[in-house]
Image: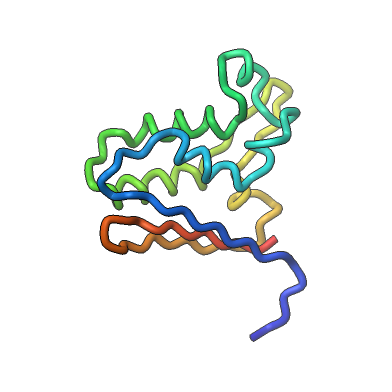
Length: 128
């Protein structure tokens, strides 16, 4: 194994295949990026005004809406994950915020979705 001087992050999410995904489930994935959860200076200007506490919540609703018609739980989660990774938004000052896996802060990432009984296990690992 080679030496790595950066940080390695691993996040795991467990979903029930028999339960419909909700925006809160997707917001948890966005929350691994602090620009979507904590840095209000990075939120779109109207995010809080239109009722969201975080940009994660807003983006989760946007992404879930795009994929709500997919009936197979694993296919839906795969499509949602792709959309989360590719998701970006522009603030009023022209700043474009990308999800951490596509940002310059990420050196590389791996994702996997495993099926275990009635559950889907999503793992996201990345280096920065």
